[in-house]
Amino acid sequence: MTIPDLASRQLERLRPHEIRDRLAERSVVYLPLGAIEWHCEHLPVGLDALTAHGVCLRAAALDGGIVYPPLHYGTGGGHARYPWTVMMPGATEIEGLLRHTLERLEAFGVRLVVLFTGHFADEQIAMIKAIAAAWNAADRTTKALALSINEAKGATLGPDHAGMFETTLLGALWPDRVNVGRLPARTPQDSAEDPWSAKRHEPTHPLWGVIGPDPRAYNSADGPTLLATCVDWIVREIGDALPR
Image (cartoon, rainbow, N blue to C red; front, side, top):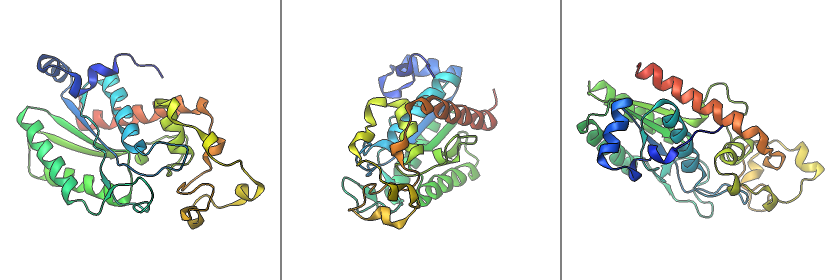
């Protein structure tokens, strides 16, 4: 999947007249959300936000709008005590940032703001859905749409944590950031294991922190289709929320 000129959709790189031009074409601002969180030895700790940002940039390049810099703070999930994980204990601080950002974007005349999270712990999803629902119930001039990457309809892989889904999607966006060679070689016992086993939370496990299908079967050729499916899905969701 090749879409040119992603940089022209990055808010932080744009001059004011460029922002005005982009929003005159399509008044949509994406707010990508993630976390700094352990994703085993083969993936970067910023995967959730990297994925959200990459999907949003491609959706904006395809359909219009601009993309806010990603927020690398999240809440919820079962990895809070893992190495190199900074997970907020609750939603309060993140909610404050997002609500104030919504207020400022409304003041700038933006019609739709998309809260899009690549970190899909239940608590994170509940947070953005609640923010969007409360915001829209107040009859604002700007509409909020809350979406999570695990909701992508038609995806060729089911959502997981550091497994085949997240490894394949990140590989489509940042191929040099996936290195399954950092993982131990597979054994017959690995093949028979439940991919959702609680044993994966034990530091001695070869797939420590991987919750889902074994990423050692990763094939980079599967990435473009998965990425295109996610991008097409978010574009459809935006089209339903803000028809042209």
